[in-house]
Length: 508
Ligand code: XMP
Image (cartoon, rainbow, N blue to C red):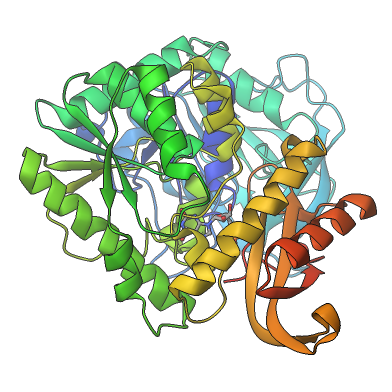
């Protein structure tokens, strides 16, 4: 496995992802970790990420110096490269011309051998994002490539196996970035790749096993792929210690509870404990229009239900399928809060249970591959993401029982028509949004003033960015006609054509 030190870069998590793509486990390591805290039988190398700080900032993080001499290769990227160079006796300076951002390139140096590029550094495009620059390398290092702007782009010390690269090999715009990471991880660190995943999976289930020990766990199910994979991992790692539970918060989609129960019975042979808490959830958010407050109350309500169950069955751990984008949007790791996902920022500060989130560093598409390896049924793997607070955050403003019923029916028509048109799997996520506006209509020759429904359908691959789905007009017409005739409370249907960014997928 490879330890990844994240200095707070927006690309930090991408490095871990690139490592995992090689079939190698990426383990997050805090910059302050000492040598004694790392199991050097397991960790074969360390990668230092970029970061938003300048190395000259007063609180700029650095690495425990003893780790450079731990005997495993270290690759420093951007800020990580500058930290390494400074700590080992080289120099970094602010540039008067304002650094290098975006597209740049490498120039190899004739006659200078590179460990990272064994067949020689070629002139190739790489992506840069730095203001300060390395001006002098530490003793034992040699410069193996310059940037197009003539700054030091790569410096290497073959004896100590320390590598400093100023550009970002982890982003897709760096031409041979992935090969560089592959070379470092597989050849220079000697990690064993397991492209088909068993080692990766085995590792995850070992991690779950040691985190759980002999305790009893509640696995929170939502019907989606993230919680199903979490359930499958637990089932594999600690069978007999898990209670799979679905809290019906009253904001689930049509038919959802029955589907979850049936899938789990057929697939894992497990009974799901269903807790009907719909009245309690609705009561908690009565009169609440602010989405952040809704999420917080819903998050707290979920935890309360799970705590009660835990008391009844003697469980001490709550496992949930939180994934990386849930945490990024909730502002974990220094990024700005976009919206606090109910299962992250929406959790109460004091909880009577320990949280276990085995997928917290993965993206949805990675979870889906893992799901396939674990034999998760296809309808769950392919199911669109749906927020835990469910219909409650697809009803803009105050939520009432009547509005939930209206939206549930309209939303089901939308999804049914999408499936019928064979387009369900082509879109990332689709749902209806009930707007607080009352709009004028003229049903049956009479003037009406009813609800307005927005159709939201997006394409994408990881929820970090999304485009609005170009659904055929004929399909949109069918959906609009069916909704306005089958759901009498709705007399207007509109289409959301916003990308993310600047919008988000959900409306609140
Ligand atoms: P946005 O709307 O921020 O959503 O573009 C990104 C993805 O996250 C889902 N989402 C949530 N999931 N709890 C969840 O479990 C939440 O509070 C929450 N809010 C948004 C959303 O459906 C989309 O897939």
